[in-house]
Image (cartoon, rainbow, N blue to C red; front, top):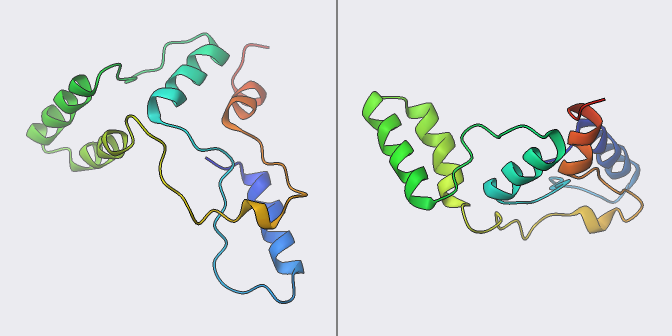
Length: 117
């Protein structure tokens, strides 16, 4: 999860480094789907649709979508299945290359964009 503004900051910083070449791998925040649902519910006070509280519940939903032929939903839910109890492993994140940039995390982004005002 990375905010557009943060992406712009990282791109500008990377371009300004004359000796920097190659891909730019960054992340504003890394969390599991369950953590994402919990943060959403805490910040907005609303129930997160499709927040799966058990792995079995998630697998059942994937099977239902597969039966319906909804491959797109199967793929999206498959991401949740793959990361259900752990964060995505992103060992190549290069945020540390730009210590002056402090990316917005998911909770702060939600507060700015979706909390009750």
